[in-house]
Length: 138
Image 1: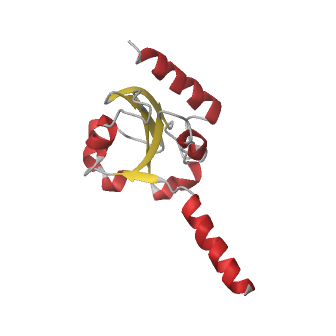
Image 2: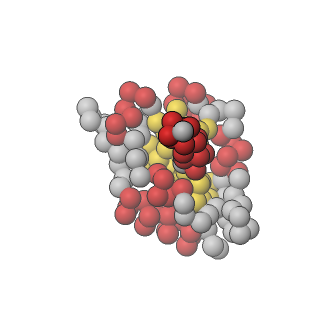
């Protein structure tokens, strides 16, 4: 009985936890064009260009952004999106773009070097989201 209860708890918890959303060349343009949130306000789309070789330096606080109203966070594996990588001139990973109304407003990019650290922390990302919200109101 205890095993059955443990299995049921694991199944229920696995459905509650939200997984990372991914984009690639097949859905990139549709994703950034999707600018309506649940309350019909313009949403902010954040896309992190990502690579497995540098996953230790990815933006790990994305779940805290994903719960904000009007903000949607996605990752884009650069090996699966060569066209988007070229269009947005992604040279280093992680690089994070913040979109509103299909237009890239802010770009955070890793600096050249051996470490390729994430170029933004949570407080800086939250300030950038507020700037984009303010600028896209007009």
